[in-house]
Image (cartoon, rainbow, N blue to C red):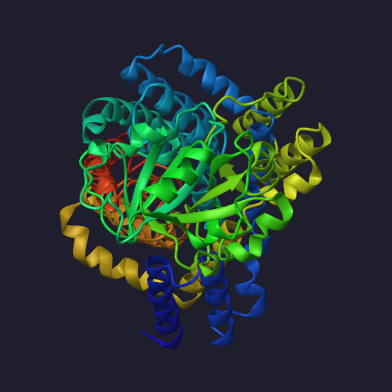
Length: 595
């Protein structure tokens, strides 16, 4: 191993560690990769920065804008809600239809914003039917992944692999070339989730669903149990104060632990924090008579709202939000929207102490107080997803048909391939703005810069692997190890390794790094590279066993109140099933020895 190969190997290992441990955000890691390769002179400046001018980056950026136009007009929510209403309370039918709608939309629209739109829809439907949102949100995420595997534009991974294949001389992948396996994944995946997977899903309550879909006018607050409170040692359902004061408890916070409803058997302990809603007069009387105290934040009068105006909201930090890695103080929500942040929830853990200094991450949930209009406004004008009360959205009936028409026109042009892919997608993005479906400001805000920077950085790293010959060296070692087992086993190994790597790293990074190795390995074995290109593509997209590898899994983590083990329990059997399907069917559709 020469100097260049050693440097690239070290960069790959360190960047992987940074991704897994979340030491830095993905865009910062990507920029560190670029600087490292430039600083060690493994790549020239132009080579290290070539990712920013890559056609795949331009294409993906344009698709972000097209997706935003389709979503902002309400077209997705309208169609999704109407189809889901057909289920009429049948939970199995509702789950099937919701996954089908999400899967079909994800064929034509980037699947991450689709999930952002469907989170509040799923929360609303779960609440209407008195079901935990955890029964719906993992299926929504998985369905978006199934659908994304069916077309070139369904996920950025497909576009990246297609671009690498074209650059290396093996041709770009066509619009629906992925559908040969993707449609099978979509059908099998949905059937699995409504049968076996449904039984494996957890039953975790959330504040959003427990509140109900009707926005209550009562005051919502937190009160802490004093050490001398007569409530200590009593079971909540045996305490008279619930009926006496007509309050509804959402959760009990004990240290950093959140105890969710049902709370019937919870024994009150000193310093427990009770989050509940009720009449403001009852709350004041309760504080004075039951040995409870207002929290300091509330005692300062920061959350003084009238009964008429009081409202609790949950704001989800989404992928691409400008507030990722910024603190709550940086948001200035109180000054700009008259909204106060009560608490921060991250991966099921309630963080309250000094939350204003905590840097936000994708999937974080802010518990906020405001008046009737303030929370709606912050969701409309900022990069948050409001998780309560918007599952019945307003549709822009004039612009929605334009957005749908533009999206279908882009899909058609990409299918018939009479124009270059970047040209078609940029044209579609411009059409969204010129037609009035999006303002130019909203179009710029829709660009997911962290993802685009990550892709550019990984393209540079992939280029460094090729320039130093590291990809050929790794491929040679792999061929020597697996060649006696035959091409089918080698294909399965590639798919399995890609899936495992994606479970802990970002899918785009894995696809960019492994595609050149897969191509080189196939060539050294005198096989057609296409089956191995397809295997890496699907392996990098179909990630279910952890919340880490795919953005949509991260997004539903907090709203569904999931645990890491929930993904393993539901997703690991699905990953194994897809490995078997891909290993058997990819050689059938893309032979190793084409005629």
